[in-house]
Length: 307
Image (cartoon, rainbow, N blue to C red; front, side, top):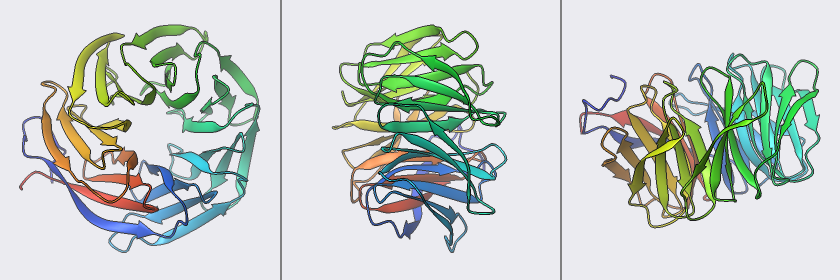
C-alpha cells in the first residue's frame, strides 16, 4: 500500500477494528512513531496503551492522575508516553516498566495538551491558565513560560525541526512561538470562534487549525492559505498525512473528512459514526489512522486507495 498522495484522489479511510475498555469519554489518542502502539487519554482518569495489530491487545493501563486525562503523546523512541490532566499535572510514563518517570507541576489550571519535542529532550504543555510551558525532560525544570493568549490554551505542538511551537486557544487564535526566545513569531487570526486544534505539516511548510466555527484552515508562512468548509459542527482535531498532501479533520458532527491541501477539496468523508469525533493520529507510513470519540472507544482505520 502506498502512502496517500494527491495523485491518488480516491484515497479513503476504512474502519478496521475498535478498541474497548475505557469507562469514560476518550479525549485524545496518539500513535507511537514505530506504529506498533496507540495511547488513549480518558475521562476515566487513565491512560491506556494498545497494540495496533489485528488483535488490538492492551499493553498497559496507567493510573495516577486524579482528574480526567485530556491528552497523550509518545516520545520519539516509542518508549514513553506523556499525559496531560485536569489535575494540572503532566506525567511521563515508561511503557516498559509501567512506572512514572517524571512529573511536571507548575500550571494553575487544567492541562489540556502535552507534546514531546522531536529530539525527545523537551515537553511542551498547554493549559487553562492561558499559558504554554516548556519543560526539560531530564531535570524536570521549567525552561520557559509563553504568555500571550487571552483564553484557555487547548493544544500545543512542536514543529518538525523542534524550533517552534504552535498553540490553539479559546481566544480565537493560534500562535507560533520561538522556543529559544519565547516570542510569538506569528498570530494566526481569522477564526470566528474557539480554536480547538493546531498541527504542523510534516514538511514544515503549513499549519492547520480547527475551530468551533465549523471550519479548518491552512496557513502558510503565517498567512491564511485555504479555508476548509463542510463540517456542520466543531472541528476538534486536524492532522496531516505523512507526505503533507492531505489533511484530516474530526468534528462533533460525527464525521471525519479528508482534504486535499493543494485544492482545499474534500477527498472523502467517513461517518456519521457513533459519538462526537475528538482526536486523531496518522502513522508515519501512511497506512494507519487512529481516532477517538465520546463513545469510550478508540478506532483503528486504514487508508485505502483502491475503493
